[in-house]
Length: 500
Image 1 (cartoon, rainbow, N blue to C red):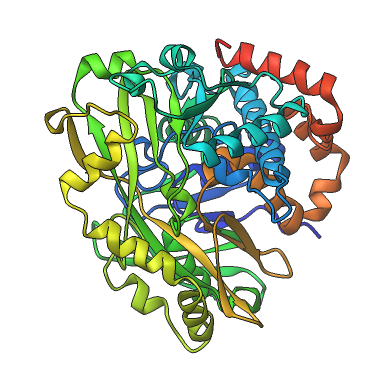
Image 2 (cartoon, one colour):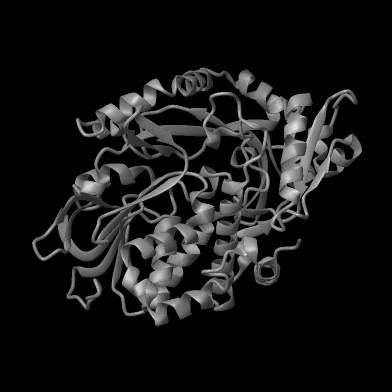
């Protein structure tokens, strides 16, 4: 029997907790697959896309592994591993196909509301790093995903690609860079708001703001009962649902724990905060047109890879540098300092301690980042922009991320960077934990969630046909289908008005 049935008031086919990019994506997918579903979304804050999905809380990089060096590690034998890069690239292609479908159908009026073409570059210095980047370039050139990548050590070429980074550079500086025109900048906040507007206007999806889910309980009839507090009135209410998705970013872990499902036991979270330097000088902003990623410092988390980013936010060009990592016990930017201590219990204590003891370099790195002065941060910026002046930049807080900690027999617990779906055996509840590159790969992540939670529906002819309509490459490995990869990319970029 399908888990979806028609329901009376306050009883839903599906309830989503959190009004970010993940809930928006899952909501649109489900309503396109089954327009009759009754869905409600509950958000603790007074607006949608207010935490990690907000444009100022993330890098806006359409993560396609074009410039992120941590996605192409060098193996002990010296070879470059492309496994993660290939997966992320294809996942982002899936996202773009889905977004193009929404634009074609008129569900999103203009792609310029959320996506723009911005070149993606990797930049390194020093003989050893230059050799690594050249080796990475050579490996990526063998794959049709990346065959338009360019590599250069020539200062004249580098100046053309990134003028403000090359200003006042001595000719003796040893630099190398790769350049990809295929890169994008994405305003995930605007994309999320557009999708929620579509859900409400076309399908009547109910989005409740300032509503905090306090408790989740499994009833004897297999439905989930949610107890919810209205922050405006202080009143509590109850709703029930056949299916629950916990997509509350850093707030997902405590809610997963409250569900008491066996599959969610033993997980912990390690919060990492971030800060940006935001440029105030219009001339500098105008002269830079790229996302330039460097190499992470030893012990740094992947989200702290330094990069100088052109952003297009609400139609206006901006320039950000960072992020500077930090530590707070909050799980959300607008969370509580008690989030971390409240998340520790006997079930995950061993995993939390094990992950901490095996990640002492990360702890030292975060302490060093937290204690930085403004001048220290400017010195980091000057590795990218040699003549950066303090009066041109101001410090702002970015989003909060909670990295996943899992049980491990050997180490007690391991810290994982990335995203992870946790779902019950019967598929009635699922939670998304972790961070980058989540937003960029949201469509692939939500399709995986549907495969795990609703396998019968996903195998049905009707759903398969509709998914292929939304995502033409669905079910096909684009790595082994270069002609299809090129055709779908060209069409997607045309619809999304990308200019490469």
